[in-house]
Length: 193
Length: 193
DNA sequence: TAGATTCCTTGATTTTAATCAATGCCTTAG
DNA sequence: CTAAGGCATTGATTAAAATCAAGGAATCTA
Image 1 (cartoon, chains in turn brown, blue, yellow, red):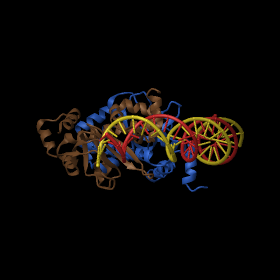
Image 2 (image 1 turned 90 degrees about the vertical axis):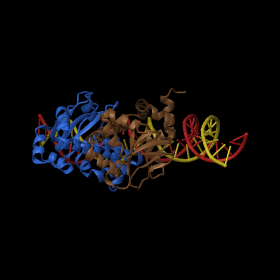
Image 3 (image 1 turned 60 degrees about the horizontal axis):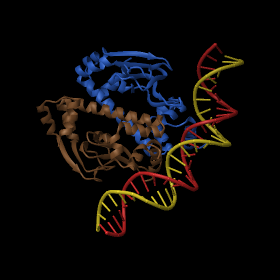
Image 4 (image 1 turned 135 degrees about the vertical axis):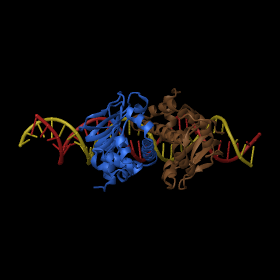
């Protein structure tokens, strides 16, 4: 149940077996069925969730009532409403499962205690956030600087698994497009039929 | 010269005078004239820069030759091509001064040694990146979920100083719009004339 | 101070993506 | 097994932003 989590952790910051055991006591496993919520807008975000298995998405609803996906999280990724988690403010994002999923949850209390007592945890978190920041910066840069065909190619190149596993209309939402437009872009990019 | 930097640091992580002195030995001040480069695309990003005074921007050039601004940095902000800085890969962003500026530079070597020897530096960096990540997430969410008028209002509400100090065509670039479109949006938002 | 440059705005036109509408294909639930 | 819903595609039309073009401050500078 914790394989991927500790694999990812050890890749970034190697742990002794004792450290690993200690950290494990702070973690809570959780299963989520497809379409179940992990977090709803307005609620308090109580966890950082590491995805051991399955797929989640985080999104907001725009004024037209359309779901706008801000993030996907497949195996090995972490997902949360970090602002809400850290500040205790109500969440702005909703997070739910695209597929049945197995998660590892870190509560606020666990997070704070781990930061205080396990220096390597702070390093892990720092590296994790740094990676997320760089990924986000890239995504933003591609949005403001590339034509949408290039953005789609980029997405395929960077996250082939997402494009394969996730329905196209969600990809469209993630790219800020309508499904119709994405379909036409695909027609052009993926070998004009 | 180091006032703002240590003020910002102490707000996040209070330092003893000795710690502060130690950290100071790792920092390099640098002045930049308007239009001067701090970093050019393709070069190695050797520093994280903290802005004590003035204003910088980071950008890429798109295939039409247009500058696409990815970030502004005014007093109290930090700017860098983090990916290049951390990995040693060539920079994808160019950074230059919008106004004459005074910077505090942290070199790669300094960064690494500070991480090893000053635990509070790691905490500072973690909090700094976390803040940057959350800000970026918000910006991205507003891009994919809000109409551009709302995005502009948001920008004014969040960074009034930027909108005041920076030429409008740079704001347009930052928002991924043409200056003409932004001008028309402004006409609508800022009291239709 | 004259000239140049940068910057913002406005108008007309073109291009691009959104919207509206319909079809066909799967998958799934009863 | 059949109906229903979800999903992707395609076409026609509308709406929005980009582009092209020009003009008028304001600022810098030689």
